[in-house]
Figure 1 (cartoon, one colour):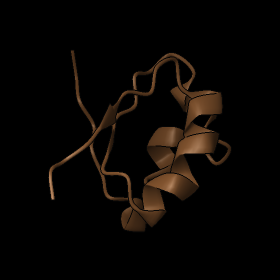
Figure 2: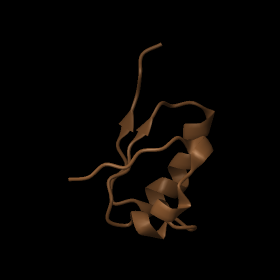
Figure 3: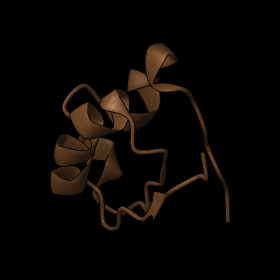
Figure 4: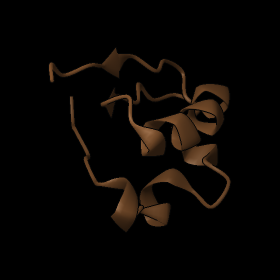
Length: 58
């Protein structure tokens, strides 16, 4: 199993595809529930095979 990670401010379109088409068979995790997560979760949920959320404590 391989893992690829990056921050949303340095989005890797080579890995995800311009329209997130390369995520169709992938499990994508989002860490946090802030403003950026709120913006990126809907398109990721529509594209990824699974989208677990990871919530940190304050």
